Image (cartoon, rainbow, N blue to C red; front, side, top):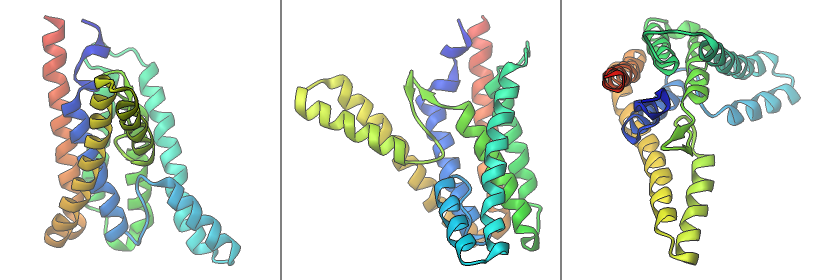
Length: 221
């Protein structure tokens, strides 16, 4: 069985990653000075607004996570090019992401720029490494693309009664709901654990890593 058939494109892992993605965004916004870990469009907007008003410090506050996100994407591609026999490259990516977020929980709030940069870096790894579920292009760290494609498929179903389109719409909206639930749970966890709440996202990613490993072992058999 090829690696593309393994857990890395499964619905179960997609839901897990979307939960983690929602939690990360809630964490960085609530705990780490109103910065988005995943929604880099929002960070770019706030960078531009603050730059136009001469608030250079705040502009940098939003720009650095954007750069870190891009570096995360580049690193994921680098991992992809490496020939690792024992682990699928996406397993390496999710493991690295989990370790990074584990470290973020130790960073004091006086170093929020560093914490946000590392969180966005991890999100960049995730968005590049996990782009499909059952062959469908799906994002687990943001919702706008999922909403567009899900709504398009929902329209196609009502227009042509194509059940395959209905199934795809359910997939995309299911990932959106998972992302929102991640934010809901994240808000509750933040109230309990504050800056250590990000460890719950790390736990979800470690779980995803082991899910993929078990499935990879089955595929080798």
